[in-house]
Length: 371
Image (cartoon, rainbow, N blue to C red):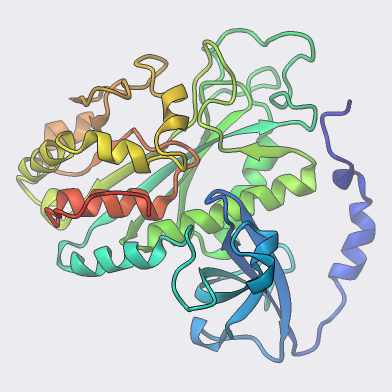
C-alpha cells in the first residue's frame, strides 16, 4: 500500500488555474469548529458579499450535528458562533478562516464546547496578565498506518539523531513542517517556532506567547492548518499521545505559563506558589489533560522517555522528567515562567488553561473537570 493518500495525487497544476480566477468583490469564509469527539475539527465554507473587517461582520451559521456526534437526527441543527478570524492561506486574500463555538438548539454550549467556561475564568484573572505558550507535538503517518518514512517491515535506528536533526535519514517530512510554518504566519497565528522531535517523523510547533483565551483559539486553528496541509501532501498528522508502543517518545502539549508577577523581579516566589498549588490537585488536572479522562496519558506518562509518572507529581529546574519544569534560566534570573509537561498532544487547550488558572490564580473550590 502506498504511504500517500489518493487525494494527494491530483494534479495541483490544474488546481492552480482555478485558484487564480478572480472572484470579484465576493469573499469565501470557512467556518471551523470542534466536533463531538472533542478532538476532531470540521469545516464548511460560504460566500459573503464583501470582505469582513472584523469578527462582528461574520454571520452565525448552522450545521447538522447528527453527522458530527453532537446531536440527534430529530433535532440536529447546531449553531456556529464566530469567535475569531484569520486570513486564509489556501485560497488567499480576501478569504477568511473563522473559528466558531458550537451551541445546541437551546443556545447552550455543546458538550465539547469548553470555550465559554474557559473565557469566564480568563476574564476573572485579567489583572494578572497571564501568558501561555503551548508546544504542540505531532507525528506524521502514511496511509498505511505506519509513521511516515519508517521501514515497511521494521523500525528505524533507535532515537538519538532525530531531535532537531538534519538530513534525509534524520528529518522526515520537513516539507510539511515548513509549509505549515508559512501558512501560520500568513494566517496570523502567533507561531513561535518549530523543530524535529525525538522520534523519527515526529515534530513540534509552538504557539505563543498569547494572553488568556487567545492561546487556545490560536492553537485550534494552527491544528486545523496542519491537518489541511497534510491533506495536500497525502500524509496524516496524528496527535495521539503515544503513537508507537515501546521505546519511542510520546507526544505532548507542554504548556508554558507566566503571570505579570512571575515575570517581574523576584517572580520565582510566585512560580513556586503556583507549583505548590498544582501539586495538591495533580489527579484532577490529569483528568482534563487529555480528552479521555487520563487514559491517553496513562500510555504516555510512564516515568521515562522524557515524561513524569502519571501517579506522582514532581517539579524541578531543567528537569524534563518532571511534571513541572522550571527552565534553568528562570532559576538563575529568579523570574519568568514554568512549563507544565503533563498535557497530552491531543488535549483541549481550553480545558488545560482553564484548569491552570482556577488552581493557580482563583483558588477555586470548584472541581476541575471536563464537563
